[in-house]
Image (cartoon, rainbow, N blue to C red; front, side):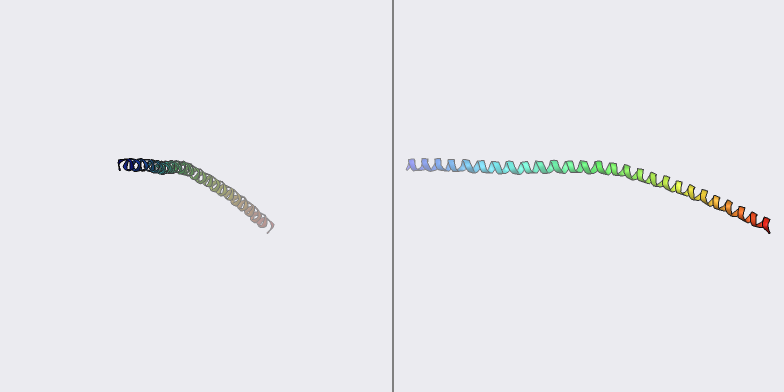
Length: 99
């Protein structure tokens, strides 16, 4: 009877070892997956922050460029309006002279 119990105990130990190894491997895989997920999440956050910071700078630059363009367009329109006004005044003076 003792021999059967010893053999049963041996079989149980041998059976438990592969299960323990399987469980350990599963835990290891799960931990590895979680670590990789955390690293990926951290990197994504850092990239998003960097892009957001650069995006903010790009928006400021774009706004400044728009302001400059609007200013230059306004100056050009003003100059053209003055030229047209001068031409109109000259034509009016010429017509007065003719009459």
